[in-house]
Image 1 (cartoon, rainbow, N blue to C red):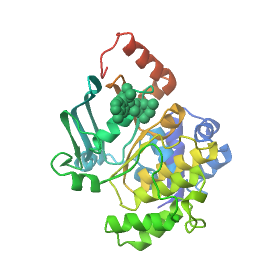
Image 2 (image 1 turned 180 degrees about the vertical axis):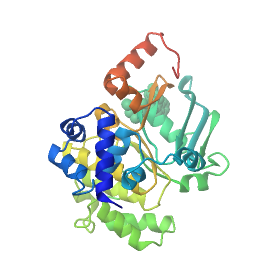
Image 3 (image 1 turned 90 degrees about the vertical axis):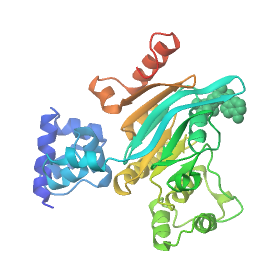
Length: 327
Ligand SMILES: Nc1ncnc2c1ncn2[C@@H]1O[C@H](COP(=O)(O)OP(=O)(O)OP(=O)(O)O)[C@@H](O)[C@H]1O
Ligand SMILES: [Mg+2]
C-alpha cells in the first residue's frame, strides 16, 4: 500500500465532491490538520474513517487503500453481493389487529440497515417475527437462504441479536455468560472470544458479576455475546436506549468497525434518527404495520435533507393518505 497514493486519491475524491479540507474535516468530526496529513501521505485514516470516507465518496475501502477506482468491481460486486435476509409478503396479526402488513425487503452482505418508525409501528414485532419468536400468518423469511419455517436451526445460527434489553444472567460474571453461549453454540475458538472481549473494551471487567455492570457495559457484553457466534447478520432493537452520549458514540464506532472488518450485515432499530443517519447505508420506515419507505441514506444527503425531515415527510404523508406503501 502506497500512503502517498492513498493521500492523493482522498484529495481527488474530496475535490470531485467540491469539498474543502475544512468541510471534509467537519463532516468527519475531525480537524483539518488530520485531513491534510492523510492527503500529504503522512498517515493513513484508521478503519473507522476509511468506512466513513467510503460511504461519503461511494468508493470501497479497498479502492481507497489501493489509491484508485476499480472499474471491474461492479461485475465482481454483483457476483459476491449475496442476500443475507429476504423477507417476502410477511403479515402478522394479534387478534384482529394487523401488526405487520405485507412486508417485503432484503438485506445484502455488509449492509447496515436502519429500521425506524413511530411507537407501535411494528418494529419489534417485525424483528421477533424474523426470528420466528412470533409466528407469521403469511409470507416467509429466509436467512442466508434458510427458510425460518423449514430450517430454523440453520437460519438462527447465522444471526446474532439483542432485542430490547440485553438479556444476561446478572448473578454470573460477564465471562461466564459468554461461556454459556460458547457451550450452547459449540464455539471452540477461544482466541476469537478473547478478541471480542477486547473489541468491546470489557477486558478489565469481564470477571465481574453482570449485576455490577453499568447499562453501557451490559450492552457491550451483549454485543460480544452476539458476535462470538460469528453471525452473518446482527439484529439490534434500540441498542442506544438509555446509553449516555459517550456510550452511543462507542456503540457507533463498534458497529461501523463490525461492518467493515467482520463482513457482517446489521439491522438496527432506533428512535435516534441522527444516529441512524450516521451509521446506516439504507433506511426502512415502518408505520402502522406497513413498510412505507425503503431508501439509501445517500438519497437523503443528495437532496440536502436530514433524515428527520425525510422521516416526518414520509410518515405525515402516509398517515394523511397521500402516499402508498413503498413510495
Ligand atoms: N404480544 C403482543 N400482544 C398483542 N399486541 C402486541 C404484542 N406485542 C406488540 N403488540 C402490538 O403490536 C403493535 C406493534 O408493536 P411493536 O412493539 O412491534 O412496535 P414498535 O414499532 O417496536 O414500537 P416502539 O417504538 O414503541 O418500540 C402495537 O400496536 C402493540 O400494541
Ligand atoms: Mg419496539
